[in-house]
Length: 457
Image (cartoon, rainbow, N blue to C red; front, side):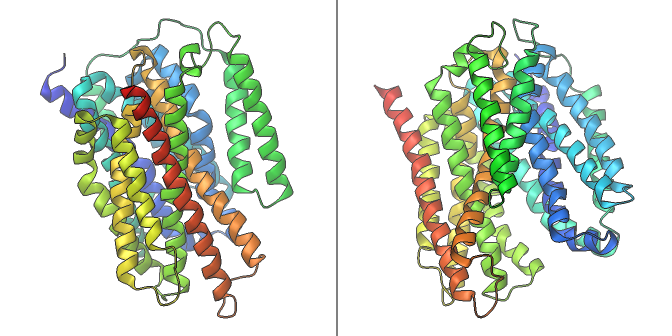
């Protein structure tokens, strides 16, 4: 048993670690034009400042989750904070765009070490009946970091420099390192095996890397080829895991239908909830005439509901079956999509506000619940691995939402830029995207409902 003081310290450490990556992502989105002014780079190359982070983070989450179960969650989390500190130095002092992208890839490596282990630390410190609330607070910290980045990124870039963003990150990482080294005692080494399954890691890591790269570039032949290569590597990974005595993902997890449904619901839900934010960002700037800063502030409505309701929704998943709470979150997100089914030039801004509010409520309900759902009836020694799988599913969902936009807008608009002449096509593509996201939200609720019925049966 841990004291209340120890629990609070771990909650603070985990929250700070989880907030760093989203803070950087949103800050750099705002700072991208300033980076482009300093480094001669086209939009595609600037896009890799964010893409490099997501690709590396998703590819290494599960391997580091397994290592954390063997070596200790606290040890891997602490190492991740050290890598964050090094990555901030590389990015802040970058002499060119390629070094900056390399630094962001290093940031992704740090995030892979921190994302899964932060939730694992919480699940090991908090008892079952308190984990939902702890997860809710941690997820709230993650989205608070994203919202703060939207506000602080512009201010830091305007008054100091985009490099100042990484100075802030370095200070947070250093403070968290001191806190975890001096105030958080003990270690968590729960795995019963010392085997790492290097063959599984060699198949899984490039498989996820290629698959997600293929999703982001699916409109090009190279993207389709990468998608196929990634799918082949992941197929080989699952075939290998079934016959490996010390597999990267234990056999009981590979055969778990509950985990499979939770992962599928996680991917589909995030594909829907993340994608609608992107579509509305385009709509606010191209149709309503908002400038990027005003659009960013408007989109904070969703984050505000998330931050306020996150802890309460976490407590709800402690008191009610997490499948049921996740299903409600999926239905709330579907209701948000339904409001925009006839999106057009005359759509009232009040309707957009209501959509963003429902989107934030749906995410706040779903995210803590799906993590607790994933951890249902699993061995404690697999905690870091399971939370890493959950985070991988979330990142894969983000990539899936981009794929939906790429395919629909390419088909409907044919590669034409948005202009007064092509505005009707833009709105048509936006409506088709909303319809797909609506179906995805309903599918995530259905998967959660199926798990609930099976549990009750």
